[in-house]
View 1 (cartoon, chains in turn brown, green):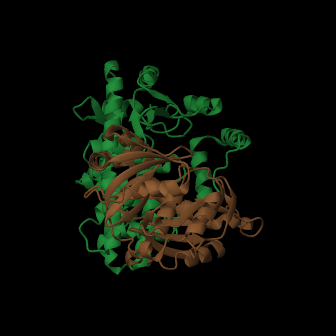
View 2 (cartoon, helix red, strand yellow):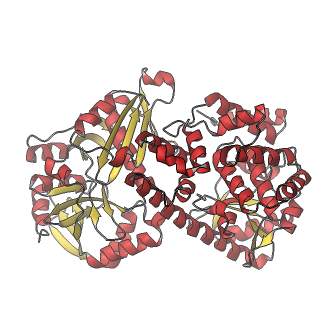
View 3 (spheres, chains in turn cyan, orange):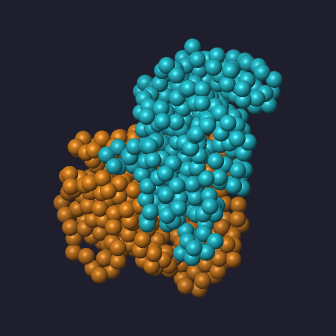
Length: 284
Length: 334
């Protein structure tokens, strides 16, 4: 590939190769405070390439490839190159990560206590995680929480935080001076902007934490909280995991231990300030 | 080409001592692209290497271990569905390797379940599988009719709750191919595993691997198939064994395929072999991956795609077939 960028996010090394310079320059800038892959050997490779040679220049379209791919993925315009790279990295994790049980959840940490927040797209996982970071929590990740089967510890995966539509403004207000990537307009999920996690979250990204609470936030309701029994929590987390089935018995044991040891709560919230105050109650 | 690096490393694991970070990255990328990361991980187990590489390979071993469990379970599910019929059921390819405890199964990735049953019982087998929760994958009537009329297997079925495919074979080459293997003998000489299932005899297992590689298809996955063949030859190595295999292959009309399989697996993974000019084209084809795991020798890939189809069917039929598929929007490579 003509242009290459390599980075370590939490315990996972990536290299991204591209036919174009622009996405690589953007990645290198946004991830400039992150380390390189351990021993220079990435866990996964992502490729951004043109399906036909003329698509490099003529209405350039980015195909997302890599070690693991899904068939018939639609290309993106080059202006969404950053989004393509992020999707490619997420795809490798979702399809092929086998060292950790992967939960589709955002995660924050303070005093060694990690709080997992999971739910459907639109529940506010990423926004809440970013807002809690603004309140001094460590951001462990906005997309995947990594549970180590041997220990049950949560490992951090603090990639760029993908914020959508109005939440970009809300988080921008709360985090003055934060660094953002270029607007990624008119994506299938609306307008997206990527937020760089703060220095403390990046610096501590190799440190695992013990899970203290599992939250199922839901936006657009009067404030309410309800305990989620381990059985329900288990079923919801199997649905939130991309590799639960592939891990077989290890996945079952890991998830069983997690839902037995960690209390789970569904929280309904009408606005961001209320949500943050509710999450804060799980701090101790 | 990192396909060459992968073959060289499988032949001589000690040479990893010379790899730098870029070399490891290319090796792992090629192994993933060829679906051989599990094989590589087993081959390199216990050797000194950078921590990052050791971790990736340990994950691959764990993953292959889980894949083995899932493959054996799938075979057991098929056994239960078919046991009441009292017909012979022969496991093929990867599932056969792990069920029989062969070295070719160590770390091997296993996708579909492949079984062989007598042609006469295809209908009852199909109905028993449908009754046990398997469903059709190919809704296209042309594809369905094509499979039933010309192929060596039923159209693929997928299990609705386990999401795993089964390929039910009645012989080991398409009916349109020129050689006609002796399917009755394949089944008659199969080795029972003691649980109602069996695997092909040693000789036939090799003949099938060679048939799959050279007499059918475009050699995609060739490096892994040749590794299978290398492991099988190595496992049963004894005076006269190769001659038995060759005699058997000739009986099935696959003498040339097995001879080429032996030459290429010896050249890539064994003590070496004298290659013909044509053999070298095959080597180029199977080792054409770059450091990103991408197939670089496009012309060779296209040529072997066409060759694979020419072996499968006579030219007028091929022209008709490709035209039909093209109209339906199918594009082979690119």
